[in-house]
Image: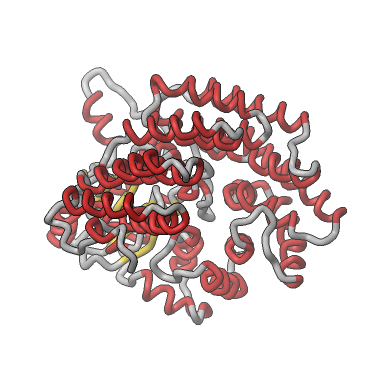
Length: 511
């Protein structure tokens, strides 16, 4: 997606290493290869839990999607890491693709929505912990080791953490690696979660964990804008905290995603220009080391350029300086050369196109993304990006065309709904007076809902509900009552009778 959120705003207090290829021997090639693979159960969550009860093992649930860039990064790195693979043998690993039958219902049950999510569960379905999907890390193996024998749930741990003085070393490990930035289940509100993290940071026995929790809390509290919304006390905290983290490369590496995607926003929130300048220089120098570190996953190395773009825009009236644009192009050329397999290209090339566009080179971004289409793992993902670039350039015809093409070739029931909604919303936004086009694009959403086998829950239900609300608002503003009536009739004819919750049938009706 243009500016993907599942995405990339994820992180753990963990260090990373590269991946090793499974060794081959003349007589043992197959055995070695098998030993270097995770024994995934594909999609059958009930069967995985039945086996978990029989073997008294916890479940490792991976929730992802074919098109998702960080999912592809995870599959290309973490899931090939021998140390991580070895620890998964203490679990029942199950891969739940977001387009699998019933996947969205399971996602709602477990309180997971962002791709990718790795969640560890006991045989009784209670959660042990959830791990950030954006970081591939060797020490995740150690987290699995800790979690494999846990008898307490996430809810138990969070209750205990309300009085953090009694937490064990293993408790702190799990809290430090918890996916705070993509947890809709336990807090629901980022401000509440940020306050809880700040309290934890105050009690953390390990200075590095303390700083990691502080940084995460500040980013959550500051919001998702280009400039964090901080109180004077929080501004002072940022001014004291960042130099401590940036002076230690081990901590920079461990916090690289927080620094990449939130560091510039925190710095821009500081009131003193000289301080902003000095911390900005220090941040970029530290992230340049990450970009050059071959032990860091390629996607994370490239992602560091986002901080350059953000800080350059803040210093140049919203425009990127020529030297920074040249740096972006150099980094794009590097990942274009370095990403050689399809999954890794799906992991990094959409972000390369986004970086070019953000840096002021939409033509270069368009050329790069179009070149990926013939061999992309999920070309419809790139097409939505191309639609976004065209819309920014005021080329509404091209924007709608790319969005339509993407919706037409999207694969998987949940994905088809999501992409059809993106197309329909693009039409309503760019050509709201064209009732025929609005009706035609809405019909594509209805057809996708009718073909859905993944359950009307979680991401699917949210996107359908949001689209239905936009359709009602469009109808009210553009005299679309007749169109809405025809679409409601089509909805009744298309939605499956098995839609027990009537989500599909009622999506166009006011609550």
